[in-house]
Length: 72
Image (cartoon, rainbow, N blue to C red; front, side):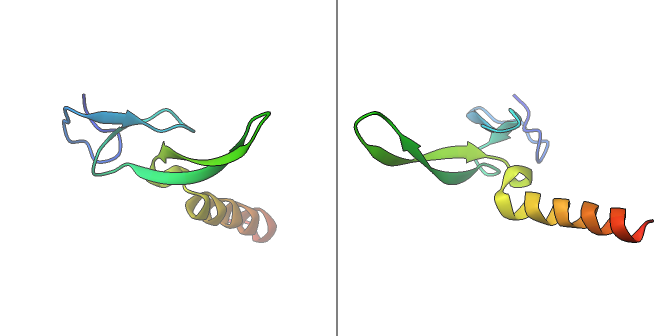
């Protein structure tokens, strides 16, 4: 399969949990999330791409807000 982030062919791939992109093992990042069940709360790591990291998404949203307020 071909990684959608870097374009290389990879044998072992993961899928981004948020946007479902195919990622090679070099491009995958992991995000720790808290999951809650009936009996306990625990932390789990989910695979995400670089574009779906919270810091990247926040910067993109901030740029959109500034562009909307100030105009192009």
